[in-house]
Structures are given as structure tokens and as C-alpha cells.
Image 1: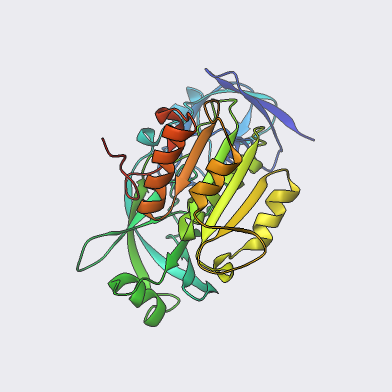
Image 2: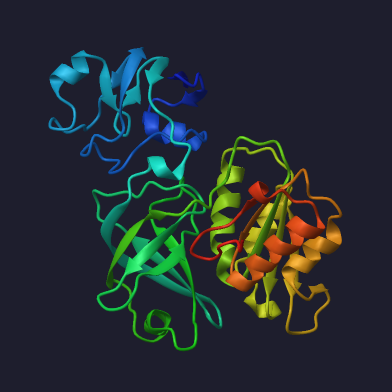
Length: 333
């Protein structure tokens, strides 16, 4: 059995099972409602049940009072349907609507996927969740030195662990720590989500993704989010690396290809059977006119800068259709 839930004021609707919370079902269908703790304690996901019946679940009394229940309010991270529902809730569409938090986290798992790439899986405290848009980043707060920024490589629907892709940079104090000293169960402090690099879902235009090196991380998050919500656009992913062995997580990329996403790997520093040279040049060679496209690029600043310059000047890409993030790239004026 499934019920139908309708969101006001957007009038979006989605199916919801009796054992699903309203928030779980909404997120699963690509509708981003506000949330934070996801366990009935913070009240961020509070909304109104305009019609229908819910089981209020384990909502804490200080977060949802009996008077509020009587007024039709519910915590959507706890509430489960007992009938079709019409509910009232704001939908998050911009990064500015999401609360930025500073949180501790534990290094749950470390996985080395290339000679100089370590994937960190971070677990937040039991009563915390980090709401974010696919493609955003977090800062690792260090006791000494500046914060280090890393894109989140997991999509919002897969948020039990936060995933970071860390490249071992010569002379980089934090990355040297990750590769030589960090251990599972170590505690870190993070701040986020940050940035404006996320999928704009309001356009029918085909999309080109450009990543260099571990710039793959936020592209991975965006593509996994797009596939999860059934985003129906033409998508072409270009990934530039120095050597073939830098192409990690290719099993995931192959799965994306099986779902209709084109993939073009580009290797710059060694001979191989595929495309060679600079990744942005491959896009220039393949597309004569990008005036009707959107481009999402992430990676080394020099690569993103070159992509922005070449695609806007040579291939008619509108400047407002090029998306990157401030911590990797600032367009020159």
C-alpha cells in the first residue's frame, strides 16, 4: 500500500509508504524539505498537515508540543502517513536557505583509491545530520592554520556518512596528515555546507560536466543526485587526469553510462588509447556551439579558468551558464 502526499504551496506530489517518514519520501522523490537532526529533536522540519492523518513518531515534546499537534503541525522527519496527505512546507532551492553548522565528526573509514587519492568517510554525531545540496563543500577546521575546503562527494539522499576525496599534495600539511598520520575514529571539526556549486534543476538545457583530478567529487554528487531524482537532461561528463591510474571509482562511472550519461576520460601526461591533452580542449573539440548548454566545472583552478575562458569566448557559452565554486575558481574580470 502507498499513499499520496501533496506539498503546498508548490503543489508537488509524491508517493509515500506507511513505514516512510514524510521527509524520507520527499527527499527520495527529489523534493528538498528543510531538516537538520532527522530524529525529532530540533524542529527544523516542522510543517503543517492540511489534510490527512499522520503518526507523529518519536517527536520530542519540546520540539513539537501537544498544542502544535492540535494546530495541525508535525515534524516531517518523524511523521508517517496513515492516509493520503496534503502538507504545507517550504522547499529548499538555494544554498542560502540551508543552515551552516559547525560540527564534530568521526573518521569512520579511510579508503585509498589511487596512489595519491584517499577517500574519507565521516560520521556525524547520532543526533545530527548535515543538510546540503549536491555539489556543495565543507571546511575542515584545523587547530592551527587555515580551514581546508573539500567538496562533498555523496549526494544528499545518501547522507549517513559524508564522503571527501583528498589528494596528497606535496607540502600540504593537512593532506600529509591524512596520508601519513590520520587513523579511523579520529575526530575532526567541520563547517558547512558552503558554496554555490549545485545542480540547477529549473532548466531543460543539456549539461556538460568537467572535472580535473579530485574535482570528480562534487560532480559525482551532482550526477548521483540527478539520477536519483530522475532528472531528464542530456548529460556528458569529461574527466581530465594526469595518468590513467588516476581514474578511480570507474565502476560508478560505468553505472552512470548504463543509465545514459556520456563519459569522456582525458589523460594529459601519458600515452593511452583514449583522448589525450587538456580536458577543456576535448570539450572545445567536441562542441561547436554551447550557447544552449550549461557547464559545471570543478578541479584545479587553472583548469577551471581555462574552461571558462575557452568555452565562453570560442564556443558561445553564456557566462551565466558556467557554474563552478568560489574556493576553486573566481572568473577574472
